[in-house]
Image 1 (spheres, rainbow, N blue to C red):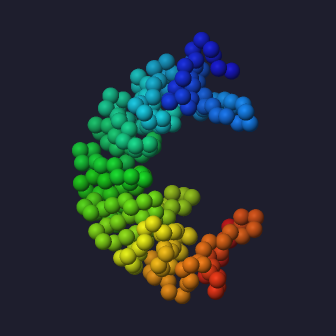
Image 2 (tube, rainbow, N blue to C red):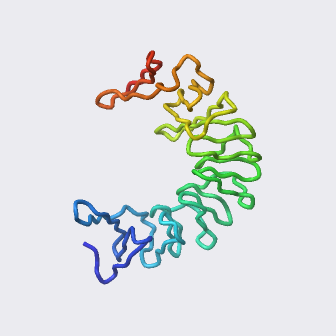
Image 3 (tube, rainbow, N blue to C red):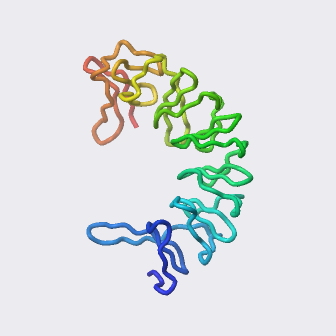
Length: 231
């Protein structure tokens, strides 16, 4: 159990700590469930404190941590969170626990949804995006980015591989734009296949239909099936 003598609230009251470790707690069926958190072995519990108002970041006298895992080479004296998963210090920029290579700290700017840029490049999470330039680059929402007048949608697989696809139309309706899968998308005006306007499909009924037992899906409209994906 938790040691009552060394107990104290930690990280916006989502966690507590004692001399033995860090604990998370949450309500379940009218009870409070307490679970011990896996933490970096380097953590010094006596000096560990949260950083500002970002619940994911903390530091002790020796290191900086993201969700209680050590951020390699981060400087405790100058490290600052710049969002919920991006931080910087005098030497570099970090995504979660990893340093992002090559970022110019002096021109570094956080955009949104895990995108950021410097004077030379655009980045997503811990990767430099070679296809984009920082000038006139804009993050529209969680699935769309813009470079000059060109609009791209992007998808990400279970291995964190990100795919950006140029949309043929310059008049995409952003409010109704949907990604059905990595190849098929739509808005209220058009269906798209790999970014090109897909005139064959009925845009109103084109949708993603999951198979029974969650073993895959079909992309289809009222007329036909365009894609079958099995797990």
